[in-house]
Length: 132
Image 1 (spheres, rainbow, N blue to C red):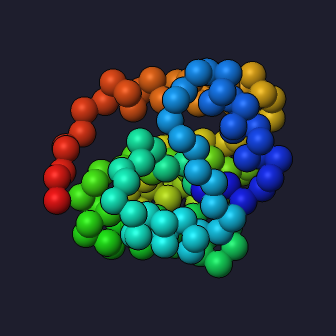
Image 2 (cartoon, rainbow, N blue to C red):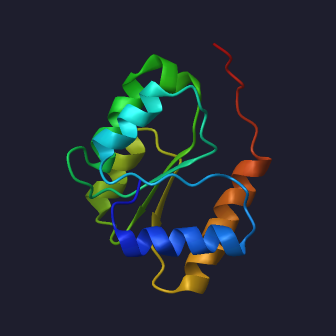
Image 3 (cartoon, rainbow, N blue to C red):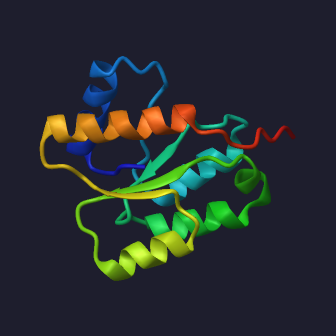
């Protein structure tokens, strides 16, 4: 969930360079993302969310996902990517059962390295396979 057009382009280019075949879907606000997750049977590989988003911020979005039994049982990894990390925000984020909190690197290579590490970790990580 990334509402900034420049950051969306940055992420798209990183996934392209890393040759990841997963479809990347961007949302302009947290409510739009929640509606998509609830209204589709897809199971995303990972959710990368900004904290500061319009309508429903990242923390509120995570809370809504966690309180929705159908979405919670899919065990979709939920990570925050944000421009700053006040200690209170990090604590609150982890209290919402997120799986990672990252500061957006300022360089393309930094972002590419971070995304590569995240994706490789989650490709190797075992999680329950819930089937409705």
